[in-house]
Length: 157
Image (tube, rainbow, N blue to C red):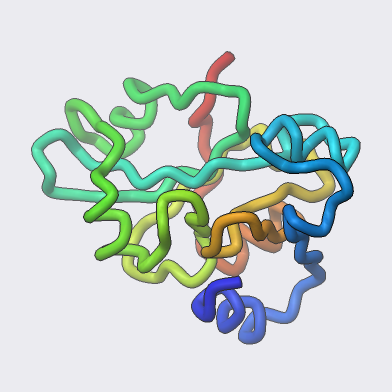
């Protein structure tokens, strides 16, 4: 787990579980493998994307369920910009400090964070822990409380 994630969890004592992909008997090669190993719906596994306005004047993090697409047009409307796109890997590292395969909304204090409203239908969700192959299982409301995330319709399909 990344030190920024550990610090965010230490400062905000909520119930969570750490899951390491290498601890499962079956290999975890995809989010679907991870969901199957846990016996969970794929929608409980999240992706955290750094997006930016096409003009480049703003960045934000989106936390959405795997298996669904981000409604880029709808999110652009939420952000009051013309269009958004996925930010570069260099932007991701410089703005969050996380690698592409381990992005976490925890420990990010310099960006607005949005969570898909559908995630709140689950008792817990799984987010990146800032390191590839490590996930944090946490209640959606607890994650929103820690990160200040805004609940919004982000995903379609």
